Amino acid sequence: MTSLPDRVRIFDTTLRDGEQSPGCSMGLDGKLEMARQLARLRVDIIEAGFPAVSEGDREAVRAIAREVEGPRIAALARCVPADIEAAWDALADAPRPRLHVFLATSALHRQYKLRMAKREILRRAVESVAAARERTDDVEFSPEDGSRTEPDFLAEVVERVIEAGATTVNIPDTVGYTMPQEFSALIRRLRATVNGIENAVISVHCHNDLGMAVANSLAAVGAGARQVECTVNGIGERAGNASLEEVVMALRTRRDLFEVDTGVETREIHASSRLLTRITGAVVQRNKAIVGRNAFAHEAGIHQHGVLRHRATYEIMRPEDVGAAGNELVLGKHSGRHALRSRLEEIGFAPAEAEMDEIFVQFKRLADRIGEIGDADLTALMGQRRVAPPPS
Image (cartoon, rainbow, N blue to C red; front, side, top):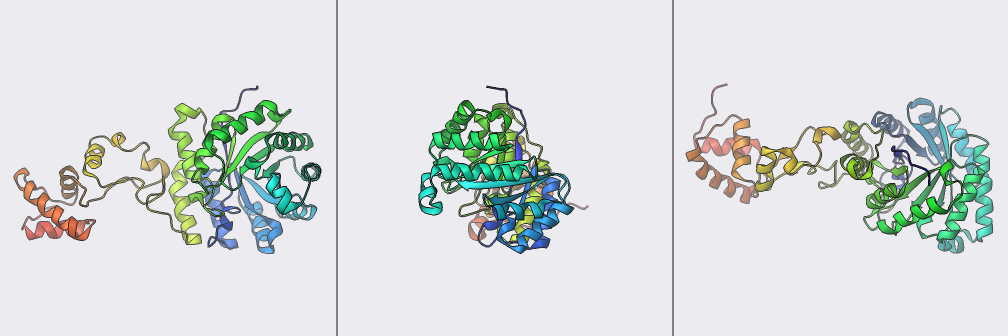
């Protein structure tokens, strides 16, 4: 087995699969603004849309292909000649276009959705990849529902599309069904059994129906995948896709384990998350990893004491590295004396140590009553004690 590159490509599908999330539809201006931010984030590939689904999607892909510099620009197409033509028409002006064609391969999809036999699936997949390759030398093929496809048939499909000219083969966990150990074993099996697999990049596209999208993506990287398809904030169909920020920061934070890098400019992560929220209105949960409001916030007194002494006690990455302003010591009923004193000093109060016991008791009573304590609350509390801040 050939050695693997130590670089993982980040394929961002926020503008395609992400936009399919109910309530996350974007207009042309929003898509262009987001695509420019993804370029600043330095993702490797932007999947700009699915041109065959609507004229609006086709125009958005065309505009991004013309105006956004840096990443490769991809468009999705079913293994249907009209889809491939629509995708290529939209991509034609891109300096580095990628045609991404897909066809379902699992027994469930063959029987109930496509009503096709294995032989017809193989024929259509090969013909479509060959047709795409006539237009560009950057062709990706996805066997939809690949994780639930019979492993031998999946390997046969992958081998045949690589022979037809696919340069990237993406293995989707379309319905978020698989587990990390299964997915890892599947990627290893493909690498070990598919003739010519060294001629294509293995990609993965994982959904989050069981909360495993990021874990499955990372397991696949560990098994040899070198492209991950993901979205900002993890938006996407049903429970969403693998979260770009979580995949990227996991690979960065645990480089000792994965021994790979991405080309992502991580300091643009928070800006990307905030922009997507503004464009779509889809709010990020407070405890969302990396980009949630609480991701670098600490309220428990033990945690606050530790962070004040040394960040690494409770922070495994620096907030500045993902573009966050910094950590936050939230004052509430769980907070301790060290955090309270630190905040009082920051806003200009320097109570004597002898006063702190009573101040702390009053602080706790106030926190039990109103929850989170802000600077105005602290100032009022100190004012009631007639403790004036020192002169500036």
